[in-house]
Structures are given as C-alpha cells and as structure tokens.
Image (cartoon, rainbow, N blue to C red; front, side, top):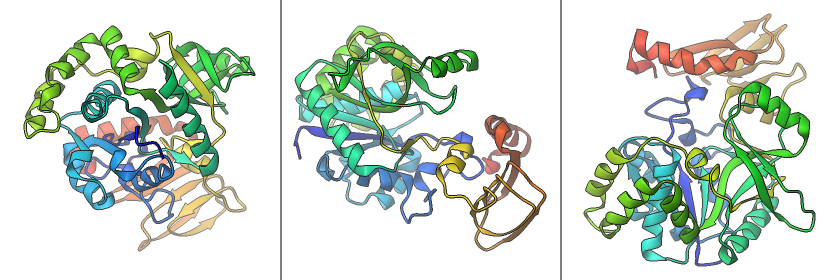
Length: 358
C-alpha cells in the first residue's frame, strides 16, 4: 500500500430520499441497509482495506454524528473525524479534508467517496482505484469513476468522454451535473455518456489548484486558516470557515469548469443506493418480484419493496409496485414509480406534524 494514498469518506448527509428509514438523528449511512451485518459507513471503510492503511482514512460528517462515527469506526482517531458545523454541500467538505491532509502530506493522493454507495465487485473496484491513484500521482488530473447508465436518471451527473481505446484513463469532453429528463434521455440514447459515480481521485495539489482557480473564495478561507488545522484551534476555525463558505457541490464548482477532468470506466457493480428504487433494484427478489425485509405475509402482491420492523407482523394484499416502509414512528406507503415524492413527504411531515417525524 502506498503511504501517500488517503481516503476521504463523506458521511454528513441525512438521506432524505430514504425517509422514513433514514432520519435526521440516524441517517442511512449508519444503518445496515443491506442486512449484511455492517452499516453503509462500515462497508465503505472496509472497501479500501487493500488500498491504504486505516490511519490514512478520514471521515467528514456533521458534528451531530460524531458519536455514531466513533461507535461504528472505533479504529479512527479523533483527528481522522472531521466535523462540519453545518451542511455546505461537497465543495467545502472536500476543501476541508484536502487542506487538512495537505498539512501533513503535501504529496497525498486522495480518493473521495460517499459513505452510502454499494460496490458488489470488490476486486474490480480495488484494481480500478489503484490504476486511478497511479494516474493521479503522475499527472495533474482530476479523475472520476464512470458508470454505464441503465436509465435516464436525473439524479446523477453525466460524463461524455473521448473514447480512446488505447487509454484506460479517458479525457472528459463534457461534464453535465443532474440534467433534466429530456436531456438525460438524449444522453442515454447517444451511448457515449456515463454516470458520474461521485467517487473522485486526485493529487491534493491538483484539487487545491482547482479550488484556487474556480472557487477562490473557498480556497482563500482554508489557506488563511491552514495553520489552525491539526491544532486545538481547528474547531473554532471550521465554524467560522463554514459560515463564510457558500453551499455548492464539487461538480458545479469545479468539475464542470476545469479542463483536466478524466474518467475511468468502472464495471464494479455500483449503486448509489440513494433511493428506495435503487435498493429494490439491487436486492434479490422473490418469485413475485418483491423485496422483503421484515415479518411479512403477502397475498396477491408483486413488484414491491417492504421494509418493516422485525417485531411487527405485516399483512399485505393486492399491492403492485409499492414501497411499504415503517421505521420508528412513521409508516409510509408510496408507489415505487413515484418515489421522487418521498422528499416532499418528509418536508410536509416536518412542517405539519413536527420535527420528531423526520
């Protein structure tokens, strides 16, 4: 393993599209979503065990989740858990981790990954990541893993690349973050676009240079306070820094603007597991096409995903294509093909019923 390789796990989101299972005080990355005995965060940590030593893994999360991270990843020191006072999207999150790691290793190569993705082909993933790290170590490039799209999904960024068969790391032609449905369908039909997985690889100097060029206000904040990192002054500095940073993604802020973006096509059994439909797609189904997690009796029911408490008997009859999800004090029943309304349900529950429901 290369001592210059570091992993940054982004674990601060609340997973609103996975409500009511994912809640503000216990988001989905801390749940054993797949029923394998590990949370999404733990699975992500273990995914890199052959890539870098555990002391080179950093987790960026909301300060409210510090205790959850410590319980689930006890091998991390306090210095490896970066606490955000407020959510400011991925650009400030990545800047914080980048400038902190650069303080101790200016030659660091960073792998930035969300905490709530699924990778089913571990060996292929490790191989692709090591190839990307080697490319980032030797070149001024920003690399993302590209996934062949299976549907015109508007929740992903799309990458059009120059298809040079001789090159594993392919030059990106265009980078479009979360297009509308019509544009997403055009991308799918064209056959020369891939999804941006949200897993990035770059040298710390390359990403800091990109911040200076395209998000200079964020780079100035972290450069001015760099001396506070790895000191007792770090928490106070971060509170001030985040109050000054705007809410912006790394995709909008940098990846769409720079000309040194590259993509590695990755057949790794990937899913972002961001929605109920993605959980339905990735899971094994019974003869009627149902995904069931709970004590459930089904009659004339097919193509549904059911996730309910193990200590409650649930009887369903006559449903087709539904989400039936119960967690804590909320039961939700929603058409699977209308799952985009889940965020609306969560927002309405907060405003009409109270924060205890979200």
